[in-house]
Length: 337
Ligand code: PEP
Ligand code: MN
Image (cartoon, rainbow, N blue to C red; front, side, top):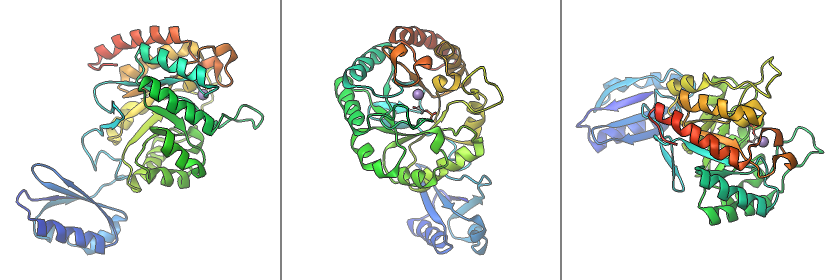
């Protein structure tokens, strides 16, 4: 429930409403604007029926939040969420591009890639350290060693770094080394993991599950937000359909649908969606045109010999060309990239 206080509501009246909400067993979110205070009562709204909210002194109006996800809904917060990751502003007019290899293979390739993608206009660096591979016999990632290389690449380039966390037991390592914790498609509904990252103050990139509906995805974001962390980026990466010509099917319609339902920034990963390097450009263009706030693109200095996802990885020169093309699309929709 959202409770709007009168313009001249006193501290005492605000505190009184807050106490009533807590007594009813709900949690409280205060938003003190220049004009007036808005109070969010989050939890089971049925518990609020005992409280005559509109009769409380200082209350102007109240309305229920109808969606099952509360904190991440547009109903709860009308304006877009905008937050900083290092020196990068996510959710603003500038479209942010995360680029880098699927997995960190060694320090040299990572630092070299980081410098090249930065020169081409990427604003964050990606690199997998713990890889969610379908086969246990495939390359599983270098683990902590990879996280250290990511931190070195950040030192050398200034790019904030993004990496996937699969296991809550590794969370301290991620807090130490990375700027954005990625939750992969396979873990979109790993609720214990979501709660753990919700307790950190790192930005979280939450990828859409392979068969996750938009509602389920937003409920997963709510798990993170419910623990206090509001720095959440949603990342569409293709869903599984009957089509086999592409690795997954990019759901571009998810962008405008999400923009209506949530205030969270929305990114698109055209690399995992198409599964082919030659599809990255058209899919990325469609993402920018339809209003995505960012992109995540796999770039490898030697895709033919990549240890993971070489077929969908761009060579740095190709990435550079695509960034130029994307600049023109961004301009057409009044954004920068
Ligand atoms: C990744 O980005 O490295 C990855 C494994 O993606 P997804 O979870 O979307 O498959
Ligand atoms: Mn990959």
